[in-house]
Length: 346
Picture 1 (tube, rainbow, N blue to C red):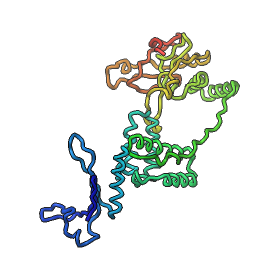
Picture 2 (picture 1 turned 180 degrees about the vertical axis):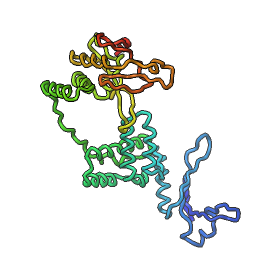
Picture 3 (picture 1 turned 90 degrees about the vertical axis):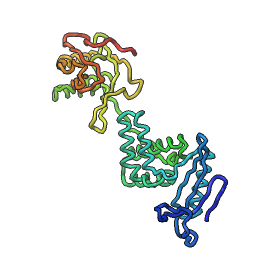
Picture 4 (picture 1 turned 90 degrees about the horizontal axis):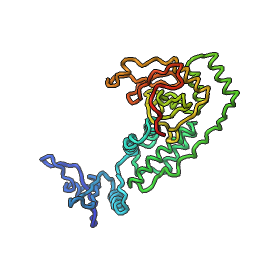
């Protein structure tokens, strides 16, 4: 009928019921007469918690040997401190991992991880048990994706996302090893970037001013004159611009999540949060923006209202709504400083 050890036992049981609709389990008489009736189950006595006995039971195995192997793996995992969930699928684990990472990731980074998981990893590996996933499955998928002319960067990001997720499983003692550790292809090398010469930059700015004559010309002036990222320029507050001192402070970054929802947050790296000196051309562009910026509306001055609009106006001239942004004060074109807050501490 079964096998018993000091810590566990393997036996056969079925789903037959008695007259009270109670399952007979291992006590069904058909188990003695029919060797194919029922399925194999193992039960393991785990370490006690708070003096209470704990038993782990798993059934549905087709043979005695299969149930015995699973029971031995559970006992060995307990000895090594690795508690492997035998029925956890790759799909359920990846979604659980995403949930735990969401609070610590930037919105764009989380959106990128989620896209890799839902678009690539779950369709490819989600049906497999987490413990059954091996390096060959991952290598075959990468080879097939590259043969189908998927972008090298796309394949690399998906594979590295899987590696990061499985590293977390190893650190939490849910896996003994990471099957994706050596399967991620080399990171594609970025193309060499060529910097414009001063003559090329001047030609571009002159062309923008003569042919478009819009507010993007000032944005390009600030971008070329300071080296700030696009999101940092769009999120620039007047309270962080100090024309009298000919400098500005990078404090915010504006990002578009999934090309839709705008998110105002911290700069990309801690080193980006710094003072930047501005040239006379950049100062002229900022003065032009100060002259054409609209003054705050009555709604924007009422910061107590939950629907109040706070104008955050950068050199591009665009304004967005942000409850966390400091209110912008009027910046007359003739002034050489902005009427804002004092310089923030560096």
